[in-house]
Each structure stands twice: as structure tokens, then as C-alpha cells.
Amino acid sequence: MLVRRYGDFSAAEDAVQEAIVAAVETWPRDGVPEHPAAWLHTVAARRYVDHVRSEVARARRERTVLDTTGRDALVGPPSDADVPRDDLLELFLLCCHPALSTSAQVALTLRAVGGLTTAEIAAAFLVPEKTMNQRIFRAKQRLREVGARFELPPEAEQSARLAAVRQVLYLIFNEGYSASSGPQLHRSDLTRRALWLTRRLHDRLPDDGETTGLLALMMLTEARSAARVGPDGELVPLTEQDRRRWDRRAIAEGSALVERALTTSTPGPYQIQSAIAAVHAEASTTEETDWPQVLALYELLERLAPNPVATLSRAVAVGMVHGPAAGLALLAQLESGILAGHHRLHAVRAHLLELAGDRASAATAWRQAAELAAGSDPERRHLLRRAAAASDSGRIEGDHQGSGMFTARQRWVLRRGL
Image 1 (cartoon, rainbow, N blue to C red):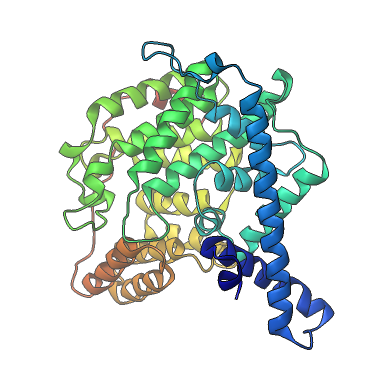
Image 2 (cartoon, rainbow, N blue to C red):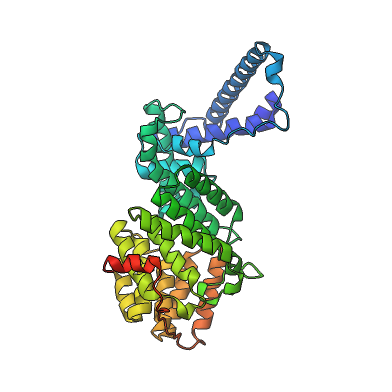
């Protein structure tokens, strides 16, 4: 009816959608009107008229600005002029407003600036999509309530917002490296964006240890991306990757950043995670991985920033150093927490059960993990393949001794009695 009356399909469609949203919000509270269709049409028509009036007013303002602006100001700069400054990092700082909690800052920034969907953000926070949608809505509402202005915060406030900015960049990279949904395992558009922004932040703050650690972590992780995806887009686990395809230049640069950060600044979570990534990246084979050092670093990470994901990763390291039974015992502590229904908890259990030689239980755990990894097609296919192979594969064994050479990073760990 609106299209027939006004002739603008797109605007009419938007108006109808707004009317439906209004119905969902008001009918449960006020009751369904006597003539629902008429109510929807009336509200939609009003929204359409409001939209047209707003557009007319906007066009009038733009015409006024154009008429009062000198013609020379409307001419673009010559091709050899300086490139305009990109204010994207400043935009991140603006969204991380102190009126919001840290989690709300990060969620809102990921949605408004980072380019992630609400479902992707929910996956990163291990919460339902509906919960995350409400969190983002409340964050926007809170900014309106406090009258937050869209301007760069004072220098004194910027450092306090850096932690949230780093977390945003970290989550953008993670979503790119392991997409939470869709047919692709790796989204290079997101990883490249996160790396570029983090490098810019590091250029601005070269002495900030956590920013350096975050950049190193991204470089060391992305260096393995070419070997992590098979010819058909399937996930290739770390133990099966062709390490000749790893980017050795990026690994060398990332490792150097790790060494410098750990020896010149107070250790933080990103520095520790980058050190763990460096241990994996520097091992020429899976068997040569220095698992005792990995375990020591995870123990330090949990002390600095306790969280169930770090505990989950530590369980793998415990299993490699002290045996699968010890890893499974640690894993049991997570079964009643936020990771109880997450596919990675079941995948780690399956891995440890395979190490213990319990292939039947491992196959069951792999299948459970596949059922819970419904969003990512490549990851689900990988888990199903592991479930199918568990019945036929033998016990996975290996000697995980270190090389005996102490790097600056290893000496740093040993000095702290880890």
C-alpha cells in the first residue's frame, strides 16, 4: 500500500520494517490492537513521512552549505598532495568511551568500527547472539544518555582506553584467523586490517610492551596461515602443517619483537601469548616443540589474566608434559563453566583421549565438538574427519623434549622460577 501510495519501494520497505519493530516492542506491553494491519499501516506511513521530511531537511542544509562555500574550497587537492590522515585508530579510541564497561566498549567498537557482525562478536565473547545484541543496544543508549561527543579524548584519557583498543584489534584478528561462521576458515581481509592497525598503533607507541606483544602475536600467528588451510579449504592442524610454507621472515620479526618486549617492559597477557606463539613457530617439527616452556608460559598467563580459554590451552600443554591423564583432570574443572557447551572444550578432550589411547571415547568427543561447531563449515568438517579417523588411528605418541638451547625468552622464563 505504501509503495502504491508513494512510489518509493526502498523507503517504504524501511518504514514497514520500523513499524514491525515498533509492534514487537509495544504489543506485548500494551496489547494487540483491534485492527493490527491498520495499526501497522498507520505507523509505517508516519515513519515514511518522518523519513521524507528528514531527507528534505538534510538536502536543504547541504544546499545551504554549498551555496555559502567558496568554489575554490570545492576543488580536490592535486594528485601529488599529501595523503589525508587516516583517523581510523582515533575512531577506535572514541568508541571506547569511559562511560561504558570494558566489555561494552569492546563490543560496540567491534560492531561500529571493526566490521564484525553481532553473531561474530557473540562468538568471541562466548555468549548468545541475543545477549550480545542487547549489550550493544544498551551501550549505544548509554552513550546517548551521557551526551558523549564524537571527539578525540584528552591525552590523559587515551592511555586508559588503550586496553580496550588492543582487545578490539585482537578480536578482529581472531575472527579473521578462525572465522566463527561461514564457508571460509580464514578471512584475510580481517587479519590484514587488524595487522595494519596494530602496526600503526605500535609505530605511535613503540615502547608500549603490550602493543608490541600484540603485534608480535599477530605476526607469528598469521605466519602459519598458508599452511593452515588445505587445497579444498579444509583446516590443517598444527601437527600436520608443512612448516616449509610458514613465513620465516614474519616469524623472525615477530620473535624479535617478543624478545624486546619481554626484556624491556613489565610482562602482560599479549606478551606472554606472543612468547607461546614464538615457541611453536620456532620449532622445526612438532616433536621439537619445547612443551615445558609452553606450559610455564601458560601458567604465567593464567596468573596475569585468569580466563577459561587460557586454562583450556594449558590443559593441552599439561597433557604434553605430564601425560594426558593430567590434562584431562585439569579439563574437568572447565566442564561446569562458560566453556561447557563450547566445541573447543570437547575437541581438547578428544585430543587428550587419543593421546591416552581411548579411541572410542575420543571419537565420541570429536563428534560432540562437531555438533557444537555449527557455525564454521571447515572446522566442523575437520572435527567430523577426526571422529571418523579415531576408530582407525593408533595411539599418538611423541617425544616432546626441548632443544637444550636457552634463548633470551627462555632465560626470562627461568629467572622467574617457572
